[in-house]
Image 1 (tube, helix red, strand yellow):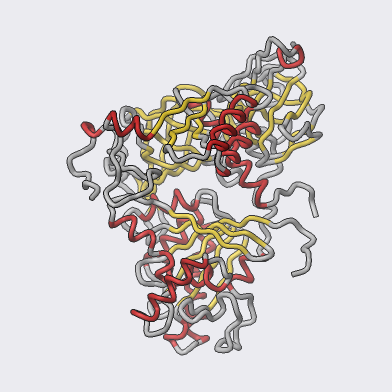
Image 2: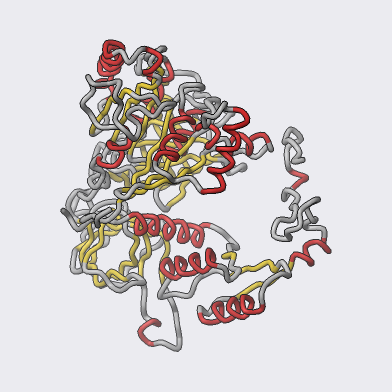
Length: 131
Length: 439
Protein backbone atom coordinates (compact mmCIF):
# COMPACT_ATOMS: atom_id res chain seq x y z
CA UNK A 1 0.00 0.00 0.00
CA UNK A 2 1.59 3.23 -1.10
CA UNK A 3 1.58 6.24 1.13
CA UNK A 4 0.61 8.42 -1.82
CA UNK A 5 -2.95 8.34 -0.83
CA UNK A 6 -5.56 10.86 0.30
CA UNK A 7 -8.71 9.94 2.17
CA UNK A 8 -12.00 11.46 1.12
CA UNK A 9 -11.81 14.53 3.37
CA UNK A 10 -8.22 15.33 2.45
CA UNK A 11 -9.21 14.99 -1.18
CA UNK A 12 -12.16 17.37 -0.89
CA UNK A 13 -9.88 19.77 0.99
CA UNK A 14 -7.43 19.85 -1.93
CA UNK A 15 -10.25 20.94 -4.22
CA UNK A 16 -11.47 23.63 -1.85
CA UNK A 17 -7.96 25.07 -1.43
CA UNK A 18 -7.45 25.04 -5.19
CA UNK A 19 -10.68 26.96 -5.76
CA UNK A 20 -9.91 29.56 -3.07
CA UNK A 21 -6.51 30.30 -4.59
CA UNK A 22 -8.04 30.61 -8.04
CA UNK A 23 -10.58 33.08 -6.68
CA UNK A 24 -7.87 35.14 -4.98
CA UNK A 25 -5.82 35.23 -8.17
CA UNK A 26 -8.54 35.80 -10.75
CA UNK A 27 -11.20 38.03 -9.21
CA UNK A 28 -11.07 41.75 -8.54
CA UNK A 29 -13.07 42.06 -5.33
CA UNK A 30 -13.75 38.68 -3.77
CA UNK A 31 -15.10 38.31 -0.24
CA UNK A 32 -15.71 35.38 2.08
CA UNK A 33 -19.22 35.16 3.48
CA UNK A 34 -18.76 34.68 7.21
CA UNK A 35 -21.74 34.52 9.55
CA UNK A 36 -20.05 32.82 12.47
CA UNK A 37 -22.01 29.64 11.82
CA UNK A 38 -20.54 26.19 11.43
CA UNK A 39 -20.28 26.22 7.65
CA UNK A 40 -18.47 29.51 7.45
CA UNK A 41 -16.14 28.53 10.32
CA UNK A 42 -15.11 25.63 8.12
CA UNK A 43 -14.63 27.99 5.15
CA UNK A 44 -12.31 30.20 7.22
CA UNK A 45 -10.14 27.26 8.18
CA UNK A 46 -9.92 26.29 4.51
CA UNK A 47 -8.93 29.88 3.70
CA UNK A 48 -6.17 29.69 6.30
CA UNK A 49 -4.96 26.47 4.69
CA UNK A 50 -5.02 28.12 1.27
CA UNK A 51 -3.23 31.39 2.10
CA UNK A 52 -1.06 31.08 5.20
CA UNK A 53 1.51 32.26 6.12
CA UNK A 54 0.09 35.33 4.36
CA UNK A 55 -3.04 37.09 5.52
CA UNK A 56 -6.25 35.90 3.93
CA UNK A 57 -6.30 38.22 0.90
CA UNK A 58 -10.00 39.07 0.98
CA UNK A 59 -12.40 40.64 3.46
CA UNK A 60 -15.15 38.77 5.31
CA UNK A 61 -18.74 39.76 4.64
CA UNK A 62 -21.81 39.16 6.78
CA UNK A 63 -25.36 40.23 6.02
CA UNK A 64 -27.14 40.26 9.38
CA UNK A 65 -30.75 39.10 9.43
CA UNK A 66 -31.38 40.84 12.73
CA UNK A 67 -32.20 37.52 14.38
CA UNK A 68 -28.68 36.62 15.52
CA UNK A 69 -27.89 35.63 19.09
CA UNK A 70 -25.51 38.17 20.66
CA UNK A 71 -23.01 35.35 21.32
CA UNK A 72 -22.86 34.70 17.60
CA UNK A 73 -22.10 38.33 16.77
CA UNK A 74 -19.46 38.39 19.50
CA UNK A 75 -17.86 35.24 18.13
CA UNK A 76 -17.99 36.51 14.54
CA UNK A 77 -16.20 39.74 15.46
CA UNK A 78 -13.65 37.99 17.66
CA UNK A 79 -12.81 35.38 15.02
CA UNK A 80 -12.37 37.99 12.27
CA UNK A 81 -10.05 39.93 14.57
CA UNK A 82 -8.05 36.82 15.46
CA UNK A 83 -7.46 36.15 11.78
CA UNK A 84 -6.52 39.77 11.09
CA UNK A 85 -9.26 40.14 8.49
CA UNK A 86 -11.43 43.08 7.55
CA UNK A 87 -15.05 42.33 8.40
CA UNK A 88 -17.81 44.02 6.41
CA UNK A 89 -21.24 43.92 8.05
CA UNK A 90 -24.46 44.82 6.27
CA UNK A 91 -28.06 44.13 7.27
CA UNK A 92 -31.13 42.72 5.60
CA UNK A 93 -33.06 45.82 6.77
CA UNK A 94 -30.61 48.00 4.91
CA UNK A 95 -31.12 45.91 1.80
CA UNK A 96 -34.89 46.21 2.13
CA UNK A 97 -34.60 49.99 2.60
CA UNK A 98 -32.45 50.36 -0.50
CA UNK A 99 -34.72 48.08 -2.49
CA UNK A 100 -31.87 45.60 -3.04
CA UNK A 101 -34.12 42.87 -1.69
CA UNK A 102 -37.75 42.45 -0.77
CA UNK A 103 -39.38 40.19 1.83
CA UNK A 104 -40.56 37.02 0.12
CA UNK A 105 -44.37 36.84 0.31
CA UNK A 106 -45.45 34.14 2.73
CA UNK A 107 -41.92 33.69 4.00
CA UNK A 108 -41.42 34.26 7.69
CA UNK A 109 -37.68 33.68 7.51
CA UNK A 110 -35.61 36.73 6.78
CA UNK A 111 -32.83 34.41 5.73
CA UNK A 112 -34.52 34.04 2.38
CA UNK A 113 -35.48 37.46 1.04
CA UNK A 114 -36.21 37.82 -2.64
CA UNK A 115 -33.29 39.30 -4.47
CA UNK A 116 -33.89 40.64 -7.96
CA UNK A 117 -31.42 39.35 -10.51
CA UNK A 118 -28.42 41.62 -10.77
CA UNK A 119 -27.92 43.55 -13.96
CA UNK A 120 -31.60 43.31 -14.89
CA UNK A 121 -31.15 45.77 -17.70
CA UNK A 122 -28.62 43.57 -19.50
CA UNK A 123 -30.59 40.37 -19.02
CA UNK A 124 -31.91 39.09 -22.36
CA UNK A 125 -35.65 39.55 -22.77
CA UNK A 126 -36.05 35.82 -23.31
CA UNK A 127 -35.02 34.99 -19.75
CA UNK A 128 -38.11 33.64 -18.02
CA UNK A 129 -39.24 35.74 -15.10
CA UNK A 130 -39.10 34.04 -11.72
CA UNK A 131 -42.54 33.76 -10.24
CA UNK B 1 -18.55 -2.88 10.87
CA UNK B 2 -14.95 -3.63 11.84
CA UNK B 3 -12.38 -0.94 11.27
CA UNK B 4 -11.10 -1.01 7.74
CA UNK B 5 -7.33 -1.03 7.32
CA UNK B 6 -7.38 1.51 4.54
CA UNK B 7 -8.60 5.06 4.77
CA UNK B 8 -11.99 5.71 3.22
CA UNK B 9 -11.56 6.60 -0.43
CA UNK B 10 -13.61 8.95 -2.54
CA UNK B 11 -14.95 7.75 -5.88
CA UNK B 12 -16.54 10.16 -8.29
CA UNK B 13 -18.67 8.80 -11.08
CA UNK B 14 -21.28 9.90 -13.54
CA UNK B 15 -24.20 8.12 -15.10
CA UNK B 16 -24.95 8.40 -18.79
CA UNK B 17 -28.17 7.42 -20.36
CA UNK B 18 -30.95 8.63 -22.57
CA UNK B 19 -34.41 9.52 -21.41
CA UNK B 20 -36.31 6.60 -19.87
CA UNK B 21 -33.47 4.17 -19.60
CA UNK B 22 -33.62 4.25 -15.82
CA UNK B 23 -30.90 6.71 -14.88
CA UNK B 24 -32.91 8.42 -12.15
CA UNK B 25 -34.17 5.07 -10.89
CA UNK B 26 -30.62 3.72 -10.70
CA UNK B 27 -29.34 6.71 -8.74
CA UNK B 28 -32.41 6.53 -6.52
CA UNK B 29 -31.77 2.82 -5.95
CA UNK B 30 -28.14 3.44 -4.96
CA UNK B 31 -29.16 6.18 -2.53
CA UNK B 32 -32.03 4.13 -1.13
CA UNK B 33 -30.25 0.81 -0.74
CA UNK B 34 -27.14 2.38 0.74
CA UNK B 35 -29.44 4.13 3.25
CA UNK B 36 -28.16 7.57 2.32
CA UNK B 37 -31.53 9.23 2.35
CA UNK B 38 -32.43 11.75 5.01
CA UNK B 39 -35.30 10.77 7.26
CA UNK B 40 -37.61 13.59 6.16
CA UNK B 41 -36.91 12.86 2.50
CA UNK B 42 -37.66 9.21 3.21
CA UNK B 43 -40.97 10.01 4.86
CA UNK B 44 -42.03 12.22 1.96
CA UNK B 45 -41.10 9.43 -0.40
CA UNK B 46 -43.13 6.84 1.50
CA UNK B 47 -46.09 9.22 1.66
CA UNK B 48 -45.99 9.73 -2.09
CA UNK B 49 -45.78 5.96 -2.53
CA UNK B 50 -49.08 5.53 -0.71
CA UNK B 51 -50.77 8.11 -2.86
CA UNK B 52 -49.33 7.57 -6.30
CA UNK B 53 -47.25 4.45 -6.30
CA UNK B 54 -49.74 1.89 -5.09
CA UNK B 55 -47.45 1.17 -2.16
CA UNK B 56 -44.22 0.93 -4.16
CA UNK B 57 -41.71 3.71 -3.74
CA UNK B 58 -40.87 5.57 -6.92
CA UNK B 59 -37.10 5.78 -6.71
CA UNK B 60 -36.93 8.24 -9.58
CA UNK B 61 -38.65 10.77 -7.32
CA UNK B 62 -35.45 10.97 -5.30
CA UNK B 63 -33.73 12.86 -8.07
CA UNK B 64 -36.78 14.89 -8.96
CA UNK B 65 -35.41 17.89 -7.11
CA UNK B 66 -33.67 18.70 -10.35
CA UNK B 67 -36.89 18.76 -12.30
CA UNK B 68 -38.47 21.11 -9.77
CA UNK B 69 -35.53 23.45 -10.01
CA UNK B 70 -35.78 23.50 -13.76
CA UNK B 71 -39.48 24.24 -13.68
CA UNK B 72 -38.66 27.33 -11.65
CA UNK B 73 -36.50 28.47 -14.49
CA UNK B 74 -33.26 27.82 -12.68
CA UNK B 75 -30.73 26.22 -14.95
CA UNK B 76 -28.91 23.36 -13.32
CA UNK B 77 -26.29 21.81 -15.53
CA UNK B 78 -25.00 19.18 -13.16
CA UNK B 79 -26.33 18.11 -9.77
CA UNK B 80 -24.07 16.26 -7.40
CA UNK B 81 -25.47 13.53 -5.18
CA UNK B 82 -23.68 11.99 -2.26
CA UNK B 83 -23.82 8.59 -0.67
CA UNK B 84 -21.48 6.37 1.26
CA UNK B 85 -20.79 2.83 2.29
CA UNK B 86 -18.37 1.80 5.02
CA UNK B 87 -15.69 1.38 2.35
CA UNK B 88 -16.05 4.44 0.18
CA UNK B 89 -17.73 7.80 -0.22
CA UNK B 90 -19.36 8.46 -3.55
CA UNK B 91 -20.12 11.61 -5.50
CA UNK B 92 -22.47 11.11 -8.44
CA UNK B 93 -22.59 13.74 -11.15
CA UNK B 94 -26.16 13.68 -12.34
CA UNK B 95 -26.58 15.35 -15.69
CA UNK B 96 -30.20 16.00 -16.60
CA UNK B 97 -31.65 15.92 -20.07
CA UNK B 98 -29.91 15.21 -23.31
CA UNK B 99 -30.35 18.52 -25.08
CA UNK B 100 -27.05 19.90 -23.87
CA UNK B 101 -25.77 16.44 -23.26
CA UNK B 102 -22.19 16.77 -24.45
CA UNK B 103 -21.65 20.00 -22.58
CA UNK B 104 -23.14 18.68 -19.37
CA UNK B 105 -21.26 15.45 -19.51
CA UNK B 106 -17.98 17.23 -20.08
CA UNK B 107 -18.74 19.33 -17.00
CA UNK B 108 -19.89 16.43 -14.86
CA UNK B 109 -17.35 13.90 -15.95
CA UNK B 110 -14.20 15.98 -16.12
CA UNK B 111 -13.19 14.89 -12.61
CA UNK B 112 -14.84 11.45 -12.63
CA UNK B 113 -12.99 8.22 -11.95
CA UNK B 114 -15.72 6.16 -13.51
CA UNK B 115 -18.63 6.36 -15.91
CA UNK B 116 -21.73 4.20 -15.90
CA UNK B 117 -23.28 3.90 -19.34
CA UNK B 118 -26.83 2.60 -19.10
CA UNK B 119 -28.15 0.39 -21.86
CA UNK B 120 -31.81 -0.59 -22.07
CA UNK B 121 -31.71 -4.36 -22.58
CA UNK B 122 -34.71 -4.22 -24.89
CA UNK B 123 -33.26 -1.53 -27.15
CA UNK B 124 -29.66 -2.70 -27.07
CA UNK B 125 -26.83 -0.50 -28.32
CA UNK B 126 -28.21 2.71 -29.74
CA UNK B 127 -26.54 5.88 -30.95
CA UNK B 128 -26.63 7.35 -27.44
CA UNK B 129 -24.72 4.35 -26.12
CA UNK B 130 -21.95 4.90 -28.64
CA UNK B 131 -21.93 8.63 -27.95
CA UNK B 132 -21.73 8.21 -24.19
CA UNK B 133 -19.02 5.57 -24.42
CA UNK B 134 -17.08 7.74 -26.83
CA UNK B 135 -17.37 10.79 -24.57
CA UNK B 136 -16.21 8.81 -21.55
CA UNK B 137 -13.21 7.64 -23.58
CA UNK B 138 -12.53 11.12 -24.91
CA UNK B 139 -12.58 12.60 -21.41
CA UNK B 140 -10.06 10.03 -20.26
CA UNK B 141 -12.30 8.54 -17.60
CA UNK B 142 -10.26 5.56 -16.44
CA UNK B 143 -13.03 3.11 -15.56
CA UNK B 144 -16.16 2.19 -17.48
CA UNK B 145 -19.25 0.25 -16.44
CA UNK B 146 -21.82 -0.84 -18.98
CA UNK B 147 -24.96 -1.42 -16.94
CA UNK B 148 -27.42 -3.42 -18.99
CA UNK B 149 -30.67 -2.30 -17.38
CA UNK B 150 -34.24 -3.58 -17.49
CA UNK B 151 -33.01 -7.18 -17.65
CA UNK B 152 -36.33 -8.17 -16.07
CA UNK B 153 -38.06 -7.09 -19.29
CA UNK B 154 -36.00 -9.50 -21.41
CA UNK B 155 -36.61 -12.46 -19.07
CA UNK B 156 -33.08 -12.27 -17.67
CA UNK B 157 -31.81 -13.61 -20.98
CA UNK B 158 -28.08 -14.32 -20.89
CA UNK B 159 -28.04 -14.41 -24.69
CA UNK B 160 -29.41 -10.88 -24.88
CA UNK B 161 -26.82 -9.69 -22.34
CA UNK B 162 -23.96 -11.34 -24.28
CA UNK B 163 -25.24 -9.92 -27.54
CA UNK B 164 -25.05 -6.39 -26.14
CA UNK B 165 -21.66 -7.05 -24.58
CA UNK B 166 -20.26 -8.38 -27.87
CA UNK B 167 -21.48 -5.38 -29.81
CA UNK B 168 -19.86 -2.93 -27.40
CA UNK B 169 -16.67 -4.97 -27.23
CA UNK B 170 -16.47 -4.82 -31.02
CA UNK B 171 -15.94 -1.05 -30.96
CA UNK B 172 -14.12 -0.59 -27.64
CA UNK B 173 -10.64 -1.25 -29.09
CA UNK B 174 -11.20 1.62 -31.54
CA UNK B 175 -11.46 4.02 -28.61
CA UNK B 176 -8.06 3.12 -27.16
CA UNK B 177 -9.17 4.05 -23.65
CA UNK B 178 -10.24 2.74 -20.23
CA UNK B 179 -8.17 0.86 -17.68
CA UNK B 180 -11.05 -1.53 -17.18
CA UNK B 181 -14.56 -2.14 -18.49
CA UNK B 182 -17.24 -4.02 -16.59
CA UNK B 183 -20.54 -5.34 -17.97
CA UNK B 184 -23.25 -5.84 -15.35
CA UNK B 185 -26.83 -7.10 -15.94
CA UNK B 186 -29.17 -5.16 -13.65
CA UNK B 187 -32.71 -4.13 -12.91
CA UNK B 188 -32.51 -0.72 -11.30
CA UNK B 189 -36.23 -0.83 -10.60
CA UNK B 190 -36.12 -4.09 -8.63
CA UNK B 191 -32.58 -3.73 -7.36
CA UNK B 192 -31.15 -6.83 -8.99
CA UNK B 193 -27.32 -6.75 -9.05
CA UNK B 194 -27.32 -3.12 -7.97
CA UNK B 195 -26.57 -3.59 -4.28
CA UNK B 196 -27.56 -7.22 -3.78
CA UNK B 197 -26.76 -10.10 -6.11
CA UNK B 198 -29.75 -11.19 -8.18
CA UNK B 199 -31.24 -14.65 -7.95
CA UNK B 200 -32.34 -14.24 -11.56
CA UNK B 201 -28.84 -14.23 -13.00
CA UNK B 202 -27.15 -17.47 -11.94
CA UNK B 203 -25.12 -17.22 -15.16
CA UNK B 204 -23.52 -13.96 -14.00
CA UNK B 205 -20.54 -14.43 -11.68
CA UNK B 206 -19.30 -10.84 -11.53
CA UNK B 207 -19.77 -8.24 -8.79
CA UNK B 208 -22.90 -6.20 -8.20
CA UNK B 209 -22.76 -2.61 -9.35
CA UNK B 210 -22.17 -1.24 -5.86
CA UNK B 211 -19.68 -4.03 -5.15
CA UNK B 212 -17.71 -2.93 -8.19
CA UNK B 213 -17.93 0.77 -7.25
CA UNK B 214 -16.59 -0.13 -3.82
CA UNK B 215 -13.61 -2.14 -5.01
CA UNK B 216 -12.45 -0.85 -8.39
CA UNK B 217 -8.82 0.21 -8.03
CA UNK B 218 -8.64 4.01 -8.22
CA UNK B 219 -5.48 4.78 -6.25
CA UNK B 220 -3.49 4.85 -9.51
CA UNK B 221 -5.83 7.25 -11.30
CA UNK B 222 -3.57 10.22 -10.60
CA UNK B 223 -0.38 10.66 -12.54
CA UNK B 224 2.59 10.34 -10.18
CA UNK B 225 5.31 10.06 -12.82
CA UNK B 226 6.22 13.60 -13.87
CA UNK B 227 6.36 16.51 -11.41
CA UNK B 228 4.01 19.31 -12.50
CA UNK B 229 3.32 22.25 -10.23
CA UNK B 230 1.43 25.14 -11.83
CA UNK B 231 1.88 28.24 -9.68
CA UNK B 232 -1.50 29.59 -8.66
CA UNK B 233 -0.62 32.35 -6.27
CA UNK B 234 2.62 33.88 -5.01
CA UNK B 235 2.57 33.73 -1.23
CA UNK B 236 4.38 36.76 0.19
CA UNK B 237 3.27 37.74 3.72
CA UNK B 238 5.38 40.94 3.74
CA UNK B 239 4.85 41.04 7.46
CA UNK B 240 6.96 43.87 8.92
CA UNK B 241 6.47 42.74 12.52
CA UNK B 242 7.69 39.19 11.99
CA UNK B 243 11.26 38.86 10.61
CA UNK B 244 10.86 35.26 9.42
CA UNK B 245 7.66 36.11 7.62
CA UNK B 246 9.04 39.30 6.12
CA UNK B 247 11.35 37.35 3.84
CA UNK B 248 9.03 34.44 3.19
CA UNK B 249 8.35 33.95 -0.49
CA UNK B 250 6.41 30.83 -1.40
CA UNK B 251 4.70 29.55 -4.48
CA UNK B 252 1.22 28.26 -3.72
CA UNK B 253 -0.41 25.72 -5.98
CA UNK B 254 -1.67 22.21 -6.37
CA UNK B 255 0.46 19.38 -7.71
CA UNK B 256 -0.95 18.49 -11.12
CA UNK B 257 1.32 15.49 -11.46
CA UNK B 258 4.13 13.57 -9.81
CA UNK B 259 5.88 13.88 -6.49
CA UNK B 260 8.01 16.74 -5.18
CA UNK B 261 10.64 16.36 -2.44
CA UNK B 262 12.63 18.76 -0.34
CA UNK B 263 16.13 19.02 -1.87
CA UNK B 264 14.88 18.13 -5.33
CA UNK B 265 16.13 20.05 -8.37
CA UNK B 266 13.37 21.70 -10.31
CA UNK B 267 13.03 23.82 -13.42
CA UNK B 268 10.69 26.79 -13.84
CA UNK B 269 8.96 26.93 -17.20
CA UNK B 270 8.68 28.69 -19.55
CA UNK B 271 11.81 30.60 -18.33
CA UNK B 272 13.98 27.49 -17.87
CA UNK B 273 15.56 28.75 -14.63
CA UNK B 274 16.56 26.04 -12.18
CA UNK B 275 16.55 25.86 -8.43
CA UNK B 276 16.16 23.44 -5.54
CA UNK B 277 13.16 22.88 -3.32
CA UNK B 278 13.97 24.31 0.11
CA UNK B 279 10.67 23.80 1.88
CA UNK B 280 7.20 22.40 1.27
CA UNK B 281 5.07 24.62 3.47
CA UNK B 282 1.53 23.70 4.52
CA UNK B 283 -0.76 25.01 7.23
CA UNK B 284 -0.50 21.67 9.01
CA UNK B 285 3.30 21.76 9.05
CA UNK B 286 6.09 21.36 6.52
CA UNK B 287 6.31 18.19 4.45
CA UNK B 288 9.33 16.19 3.27
CA UNK B 289 7.47 15.31 0.09
CA UNK B 290 4.12 16.01 -1.50
CA UNK B 291 2.24 14.26 -4.28
CA UNK B 292 -0.49 14.94 -6.82
CA UNK B 293 -3.16 16.29 -6.13
CA UNK B 294 -1.93 17.82 -2.84
CA UNK B 295 -1.86 21.59 -2.44
CA UNK B 296 1.40 23.02 -1.04
CA UNK B 297 3.40 26.21 -0.89
CA UNK B 298 6.85 25.63 -2.38
CA UNK B 299 9.82 27.66 -1.13
CA UNK B 300 12.84 27.62 -3.46
CA UNK B 301 16.54 28.03 -2.58
CA UNK B 302 16.91 30.91 -5.04
CA UNK B 303 14.84 34.03 -5.25
CA UNK B 304 13.70 33.54 -8.84
CA UNK B 305 11.19 35.67 -10.66
CA UNK B 306 8.23 33.29 -10.67
CA UNK B 307 4.59 34.26 -10.98
CA UNK B 308 1.14 32.84 -11.55
CA UNK B 309 1.00 30.88 -14.78
CA UNK B 310 4.55 29.55 -14.46
CA UNK B 311 4.96 25.86 -13.83
CA UNK B 312 7.60 23.97 -11.83
CA UNK B 313 8.67 20.64 -13.29
CA UNK B 314 11.17 17.95 -12.33
CA UNK B 315 14.22 17.33 -14.51
CA UNK B 316 12.95 13.98 -15.76
CA UNK B 317 9.66 13.29 -17.56
CA UNK B 318 9.76 16.75 -19.09
CA UNK B 319 6.61 18.25 -20.63
CA UNK B 320 6.08 19.78 -24.04
CA UNK B 321 6.25 23.52 -24.62
CA UNK B 322 4.72 25.12 -27.68
CA UNK B 323 2.51 27.89 -28.96
CA UNK B 324 1.19 25.69 -31.77
CA UNK B 325 -1.14 23.17 -30.17
CA UNK B 326 -3.20 20.28 -31.48
CA UNK B 327 -6.08 18.61 -29.74
CA UNK B 328 -9.72 17.76 -29.62
CA UNK B 329 -12.40 20.16 -28.46
CA UNK B 330 -16.00 19.70 -27.37
CA UNK B 331 -17.82 22.76 -28.60
CA UNK B 332 -20.35 24.03 -26.03
CA UNK B 333 -21.74 27.26 -27.44
CA UNK B 334 -24.69 28.02 -29.68
CA UNK B 335 -22.44 30.21 -31.81
CA UNK B 336 -20.29 27.75 -33.76
CA UNK B 337 -16.51 27.57 -33.67
CA UNK B 338 -14.96 29.43 -36.51
CA UNK B 339 -11.47 29.41 -37.84
CA UNK B 340 -9.47 32.57 -37.27
CA UNK B 341 -11.51 33.90 -34.36
CA UNK B 342 -9.70 35.06 -31.23
CA UNK B 343 -10.45 33.42 -27.91
CA UNK B 344 -8.85 33.26 -24.49
CA UNK B 345 -7.32 29.90 -23.70
CA UNK B 346 -7.13 28.92 -20.04
CA UNK B 347 -4.66 26.17 -19.27
CA UNK B 348 -3.77 25.26 -15.67
CA UNK B 349 -3.23 28.62 -13.99
CA UNK B 350 -2.70 30.82 -17.02
CA UNK B 351 -4.94 32.52 -19.52
CA UNK B 352 -3.57 33.60 -22.91
CA UNK B 353 -4.89 34.90 -26.21
CA UNK B 354 -5.42 32.18 -28.78
CA UNK B 355 -6.59 31.72 -32.35
CA UNK B 356 -8.03 28.53 -33.80
CA UNK B 357 -5.86 28.37 -36.91
CA UNK B 358 -7.34 25.23 -38.38
CA UNK B 359 -10.38 23.02 -37.98
CA UNK B 360 -9.01 19.68 -39.13
CA UNK B 361 -11.98 17.41 -38.63
CA UNK B 362 -15.30 16.77 -37.00
CA UNK B 363 -15.73 13.41 -35.27
CA UNK B 364 -18.59 11.27 -36.53
CA UNK B 365 -20.15 9.88 -33.39
CA UNK B 366 -21.62 6.88 -35.21
CA UNK B 367 -18.35 5.62 -36.64
CA UNK B 368 -15.87 7.51 -34.40
CA UNK B 369 -14.13 8.49 -37.65
CA UNK B 370 -12.87 12.03 -38.23
CA UNK B 371 -14.56 13.79 -41.14
CA UNK B 372 -12.01 16.17 -42.65
CA UNK B 373 -12.35 19.93 -43.00
CA UNK B 374 -15.82 20.76 -41.74
CA UNK B 375 -16.99 24.35 -42.25
CA UNK B 376 -17.65 24.85 -38.55
CA UNK B 377 -18.16 23.11 -35.24
CA UNK B 378 -21.65 23.43 -33.77
CA UNK B 379 -22.76 23.04 -30.16
CA UNK B 380 -22.08 19.53 -28.82
CA UNK B 381 -19.79 18.71 -31.76
CA UNK B 382 -16.36 17.26 -31.18
CA UNK B 383 -13.54 18.11 -33.53
CA UNK B 384 -9.80 18.19 -34.01
CA UNK B 385 -8.27 21.66 -34.07
CA UNK B 386 -4.98 23.50 -34.26
CA UNK B 387 -4.54 26.50 -32.01
CA UNK B 388 -1.89 29.21 -31.87
CA UNK B 389 -1.37 30.89 -28.51
CA UNK B 390 0.18 34.31 -27.86
CA UNK B 391 2.59 32.74 -25.34
CA UNK B 392 4.00 29.20 -25.26
CA UNK B 393 2.05 26.70 -23.19
CA UNK B 394 3.75 24.06 -21.03
CA UNK B 395 1.68 20.93 -21.36
CA UNK B 396 1.32 17.17 -21.52
CA UNK B 397 -0.87 14.91 -23.59
CA UNK B 398 -4.32 14.67 -22.04
CA UNK B 399 -3.91 10.89 -22.17
CA UNK B 400 -0.95 11.25 -19.77
CA UNK B 401 -2.23 14.00 -17.51
CA UNK B 402 -5.80 15.25 -17.37
CA UNK B 403 -4.77 18.45 -15.55
CA UNK B 404 -1.87 19.67 -17.68
CA UNK B 405 -3.39 18.23 -20.87
CA UNK B 406 -6.70 20.06 -20.74
CA UNK B 407 -7.81 23.60 -21.47
CA UNK B 408 -10.92 25.67 -22.00
CA UNK B 409 -11.64 28.33 -24.60
CA UNK B 410 -13.31 31.51 -23.39
CA UNK B 411 -15.18 33.84 -25.69
CA UNK B 412 -13.87 37.39 -25.57
CA UNK B 413 -16.46 39.95 -24.57
CA UNK B 414 -18.99 37.56 -23.04
CA UNK B 415 -16.51 35.50 -20.97
CA UNK B 416 -18.57 32.42 -21.84
CA UNK B 417 -16.78 29.09 -21.74
CA UNK B 418 -17.25 27.90 -25.30
CA UNK B 419 -15.10 24.77 -25.48
CA UNK B 420 -13.37 22.15 -23.41
CA UNK B 421 -10.19 20.86 -24.97
CA UNK B 422 -7.88 17.88 -24.68
CA UNK B 423 -4.36 18.20 -26.00
CA UNK B 424 -2.53 15.75 -28.23
CA UNK B 425 1.00 14.67 -27.21
CA UNK B 426 3.68 17.32 -27.75
CA UNK B 427 5.84 16.84 -30.82
CA UNK B 428 8.89 18.00 -28.91
CA UNK B 429 9.71 17.89 -25.21
CA UNK B 430 11.54 20.52 -23.18
CA UNK B 431 15.26 19.64 -23.06
CA UNK B 432 16.89 19.30 -19.62
CA UNK B 433 19.78 21.57 -20.64
CA UNK B 434 17.32 24.23 -21.79
CA UNK B 435 18.50 27.67 -20.73
CA UNK B 436 20.79 26.36 -18.04
CA UNK B 437 22.14 29.28 -16.10
CA UNK B 438 22.94 29.22 -12.44
CA UNK B 439 21.92 32.01 -10.14
